[in-house]
Structure formats: C-alpha cells, structure tokens
Figure 1: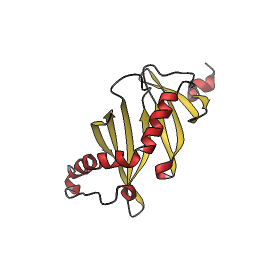
Figure 2: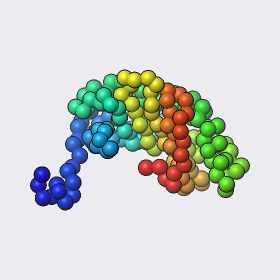
Figure 3: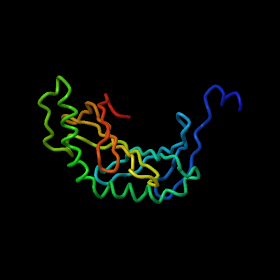
Figure 4: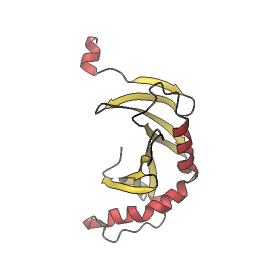
Length: 162
C-alpha cells in the first residue's frame, strides 16, 4: 500500500458491465457489493443501484439475474408503487406532524432514487427501493422500503435518502 492509498484510501475497483455500465466494487462490514447508476424508464432518470449478495460474482460479468430483476421492477413499477402506497402512507401517518398524510398522485409526489438488487440465487428475494418525496417540486425527505419478494419487511423515513 502506497502512502497516498494509506492517507486517502484505495480507489474502488471499476468494472464495465454491458447492462449496468460502470460498476464500482465496494466493501462494507466484510461484504462486497457493486454500486452503479442506470437509466430507469418509469421516472425518465438515472437511479443508483447496488448489487448485493453472498454469492455475488466479483468479476461483474454474471449479472443476468439482476438484469432480469431490474427489468421486472421497471416493467411492474406502477403496480409496485400502487402496492407500496398504503404502507408509505401509514409510515408517514405515524409521524406526529403527518397524521392526515394521504398520497394523491404517487408519481408526482414520489420518485425512486435507489434500488438494492440481490443476486437472485436465494429465496425469498431480499431487495429494497428508496423514494424521494416531493412537494411543489422540492425534495422534502424520503422513505426506504425493504422487501422479501413482494412483502414489506421494514421501512424507514430519512431526511433525503441517499
């Protein structure tokens, strides 16, 4: 390890993937994962994506199952939002200042900003989705939702989900 690596840390390894583009290999709590950004058609914008899993292919080449999972989320996005809306409303309503919170137009009030995709080799599929919440075009806060297949396992509000 050189002096600059010691002071500033090693640069993450970058891998080019035909579907996900440039992916950075990172490590946290002993687990490796990839971080990348990809265009997400339902919101006409790029979203951050994290590819995770115990059996993650560190070469970044074997991502076909994650690609298919991403495409399913993209094609089913409206249905996913419709399914998650009551859970999101309930999470906000539990906040004292948001007692009467009601979603009137999900796609104008929330925008996905992050997806955590599993390797898809184990069931249930543990994945997560995060949304920013907007009010009159300004970002207020966000919500992260952890799922097992299509079942909500956990949710938490955040100032702005990153």
